[in-house]
Image (cartoon, rainbow, N blue to C red; front, side, top):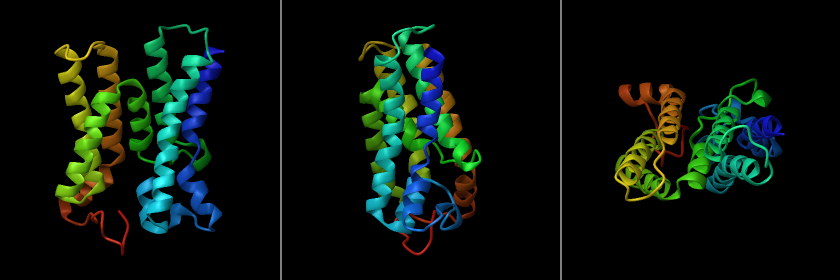
Length: 209
């Protein structure tokens, strides 16, 4: 049952809402804009309402994966925290390498947000604040996502390692680092565009990210 729950976590993450919702309107999101099946591309192509819908659904994928393994899988071969982290990680991998999209999924930020909102809400909310602040300052979604992901690592270490919040875990810290590296790798083309000055800004309505 435990391994079935892990498979469900992966498949939940693999549901490509950024592809399915535009497809209902006759649009293949992989062929327009940045060609990335993610909420940012959907927002640029279809508008903020559809982008927000995809964002919320992608966040829920990460949360539901952990919720399911927590409450509907009583028999676990490892401790609860490790099981939750594994389920969350698999949902992120499912999102970024979706078998329904020939293993070419999104960049993992939204589903990661859902995972960490469930597990460590305070540092995650501070990371969201960091994202909003970065977006206002720099006007780049990609750069703000990377900065916010880095800030999550800082906020977690500061709040938990200093015992301001209880429950510090080296495993949690390690998973945050791994997911941070995954998000950076998935944004490597954005990083190149940022460096050469061709990355489009958040409020640029003519082109995509």
